[in-house]
Length: 239
Figure 1 (spheres, rainbow, N blue to C red):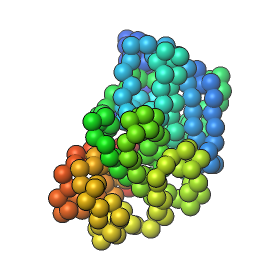
Figure 2 (figure 1 turned 90 degrees about the vertical axis):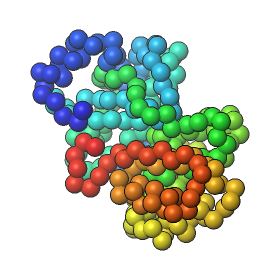
Figure 3 (figure 1 turned 30 degrees about the horizontal axis):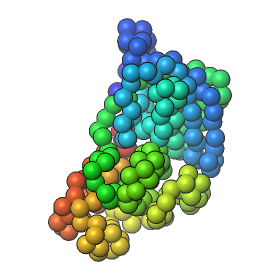
């Protein structure tokens, strides 16, 4: 629901208040000037936060955006997101302006489960919009002692973010079209290691990059599961 009439948004939040809990911003941190971590606290008891689930946040009177949850603790009522601030988009303006003590409503989490604890190897491919998802994998794979590699195409000013978030086994690429070129994708080391044939591939971020990686996976006859969710597409608002 990227955009709805103001009256409809107000009505939905009133009628389904339990599905849109009021949260207080308890901490914000700029990892870089373009990547911000925001932590909320409120009553989220009974909500199911699975790795890869997203919440909806109203970023203006009429516009809503989806944000993947990077961390949650339902007992403490804590929910965290990591957002990419890009230009003057409504979501970026709203998130940039959020400060400690402000209150907003979030939706109940929903989406597609991205993590299968029975799979020992995971490959995460994405960009700045995928950083929250990447971070959400950390505790799970460390607890299970599973292998996880992150391939991230990032703007130069965000190259240090994976390290600052504590990600292990990551490779950063510049946004030079690598993930939209089948030959470049096919040359990634993971496609040449038999030990990764049964990996789960989680593809998020740019729709065109996801399509390219999926084609290469099909050509390589990978046996693992492919989970794909485009977060944005050039020229399309509110994907």
